[in-house]
Length: 576
Image (cartoon, rainbow, N blue to C red; front, side, top):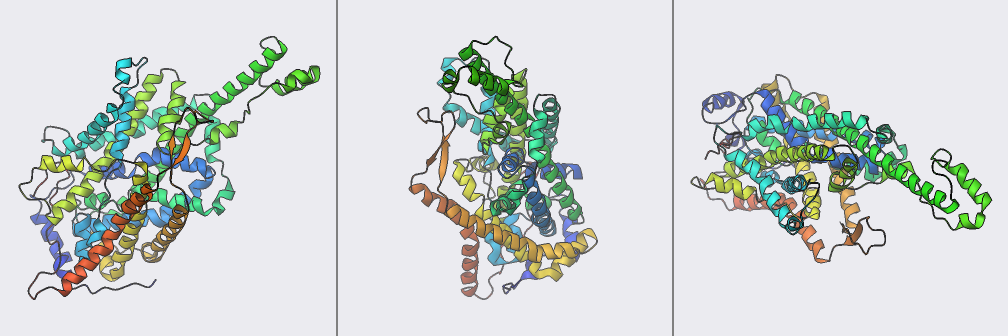
């Protein structure tokens, strides 16, 4: 691969040598926070990586791309794209001991824009989870319905208040690092409970069989591979900045290679495990709808021909249809029967939040003690969003501290409060601000660090005891950048040719209660260009700025941006 090698003066001044690194770590032992133990660090990373996308986006993509056939490209790209980039972010954060902006500023002054974080869209999801929990009642009084409009706002405030208060809490209260013991493990407990319950329901086996039965023709569809590559980014939370910040608090000699492998295995397992749980419930829902459909057809036939109840069943329905048609063809011709197809009910997909808030909840309402299962399900979603928001906050706070953009006397309560107000609005903002910019940032990461292969290999050897093997070298230098380039080009072509639409529930729609796809107004296309383009343009803009500044620099001026270690605490005590 052809690489553009930029002049990099002052690199040794910005990055401490290997001999200095251990000395710096000892000097920072009393001032710079570290993880209390390895389990705390791993659970935090798992909570940040394993999120809502594993629970609802992955099952939906499996449903849309041939069931088990989607798992094949997903697992392949997880190995070729996800694990190498995760290892890369862990290694560079641990080596340089800075946040995302500080890391890339140290690598090269023109790369400061690569560390531009993309913080959380998950607060909005957490607010919906709280709203659903508040509305789980047998009877909702009319006066409370009038307050429905204000509920999402209040729940949004509360969903972001939790990680904000956790980051500000004094030592006697739970902090983010302590909260991960609950937020990262509770979803697995709830999923296991749902799996046990789901396997006892009628139709669960049909749903699981539908999930793992591959439609191999989907493997020839480029969109399947495109969605699989995008799902790897979402499920690993790559290029968000949080993983780099988390690894910067590790010991210099922590085995970041093993960490990346363990978290990757957990991530892939969680996606498949969550899909199995979801489809056991979806199989139950599809079976219920299949039985209801047949019951309606049976009732239609019984009423039309005045047949005794119990004489017509699902097993002899086709035979009874033929008998009725032979008995009175004119009367039979006037009857209208619904089409009852189990595969159609199983393949009815609802994207994104619809899978959680429509399909899954519809199945829960038909389960015994539905309120209990509803509370467990939305509590799980809330914990998944909460643990991811901790990482999003860390991805913003640490770069702000590294760059010294916040005055030393700036109240830390106000700082975290402003961060918790982050962008949690429209679906298209999440779709476009969290797609193209992420791929571009990750591409720059994979194409920049291994460019200095000799030095980077020595750094990793110093940290973990051996150099990266040939697999990592090939992935970082060739395969991962090439995959991301292909994903970017295909994604750009697909999205440019697609009309932007959103779903609405309109009673006047002829297929109501199905949602209707309505096109966005023209001005939204301008907004999409802005939200997708601004984060992407930060990288070249900073590069041009630093180039011009370097040309105009007076003799004696300092070259480089960040020379101090990050002091933003993972335990909620923000230092300046």
